[in-house]
Length: 168
Image (tube, rainbow, N blue to C red; front, side):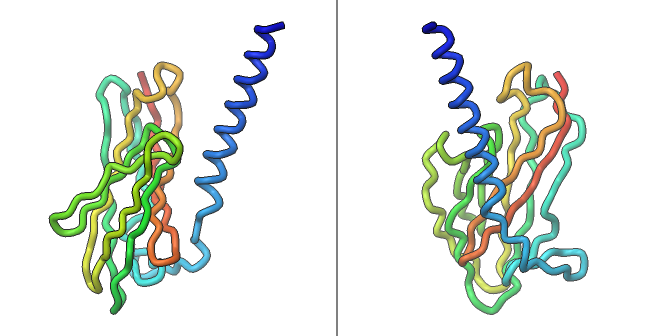
């Protein structure tokens, strides 16, 4: 009887965790006001060269992989980047504006999420380095993955997506 209670509690906790991840990665999207501009995407004053990146096949044994996304403020006013978070504990993101590097930022509930509170001036660019650890989920973590990094800025949320096929 005690063993059944532990199994039920574990299942409920697992389902709550999955629901939380789905809620965080899905409900903060602001894709409604995006438009295309010469191959780049626009969200408010921010221009993004790309929103998603596929690492292709990556090996757990080879270790972490990183991709750098470029963000540019194409507006005439500064934009505040207030918060950065990821959809999974296996993914981290760091923000670099000029010589200032903030992060790494991770998944809510697994790490403390300090406010970023960095201003991206008019015409200024920033780099968002997203790192994925294919070994974070252990041997069961092989196969196709998709992760999201969210960047809250001046009332909007940008989502950056990474994907890969993890092999042993």
